[in-house]
Length: 546
Image 1 (cartoon, rainbow, N blue to C red):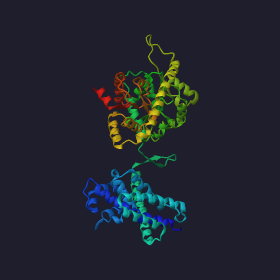
Image 2: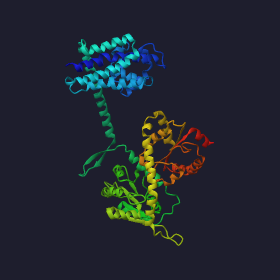
Image 3: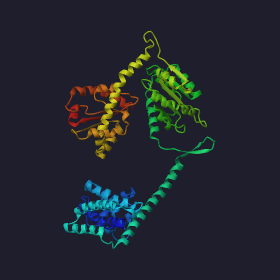
Image 4: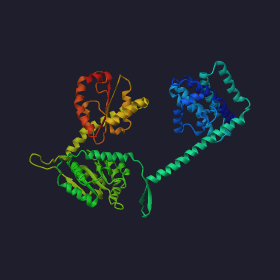
């Protein structure tokens, strides 16, 4: 059969629209929001919805003209497969079964689009033809069963059989319609490209800035919205707010500021406590940096988002490990030392200042493997010593104990959290989008949310859906109140407490323990350090509140 492609085209153009047109009218008749009289009256009633489809480019200008002609009335017989499927699936989405949507979108319209883009229509095999025909036959008959009487359905089946084997008397007109539709689609895409090109050119001109290149000539650099840079800036502001107002800065503050003015970079280090870190913050605060152009980085990957055009100051916090030396982290940072040092030298009076804050023991170990000039400008900050507060000479041992005791527990929490998120990842994607949106809006506003409802209502899945906005490494599932004390506040920014009042029975003792810990949670939330998601069965939550 040499005309396999043309027979499929006839199926799509002449046969498929017939039950779809009846299906549209049937759904319009059943629309509870209007009293159906004519197609024109119904389309006038649904005009806002059609305009929405047009704005979203689901309906082209020429298709819109078929629905609302300038003269005369709308003729349903002129609506092709593409327009009919769009109208039915978009305007009656809640009134039709998922299977019908699949048959119309994936089978009828999907095959139509596949046929339109076949590279060589004359080389279609018998197997390909039979597969396309079977799918179209199944889909159209399924729709026809819902709108045709038994007699008309039988005639419709014979029409399909004739189109498969008999001659094609209307082939010329059918192909004309087919290629006209193809040309209209191509023209619509070209119009979109032209429109987008003009808009893009305008946008590029607004966001392009001149920057000198290596030869001194002006190069163009594109400013783009960078969400990670915004997070780094927000992290810096949060950290600066941690510095107590009454902090009594030691004399090393002056040394830090001097090195920043002279070299534009400095390493601030000290013992395991926070004094050296707070001293660094005090020195930074006195330099008068613009906080909106200052960032805090922890990982080497953050550096690619930093440019002197956008940033004046960088606080590099614990770049070689937080509690112990991290070789992988240190090696990654060492790879960008040259870039960091070069950037602090400035470009056309544009200078970027850099403060690296790290523990002295960790810094010493890092220099053994990755020594660099950038690590030579050091200011050491130590605690005041006295008879009542002698110097701590067991610093190395304390760090080792801290690592062995704390990290396995923290790692266990990470494993539990990862398993928890994976378990509910599929069910979370199936939750009602409106429920998730409402929860997300409240969560964004308050930074904490309690998800409640009857047992097995999906509240845990909603919690995981909200958590999907975070990296898994930034989340921690707390299984008991004491787990809060094991949280790494430098890396964890979301806490999930699932069924805090007891998963299988109401546990009053556990609730009181949680309540005593909620004060600390609330303080962390108000300080901008933590967001919290809590789930609880409705009946148990009512008991807690009372």
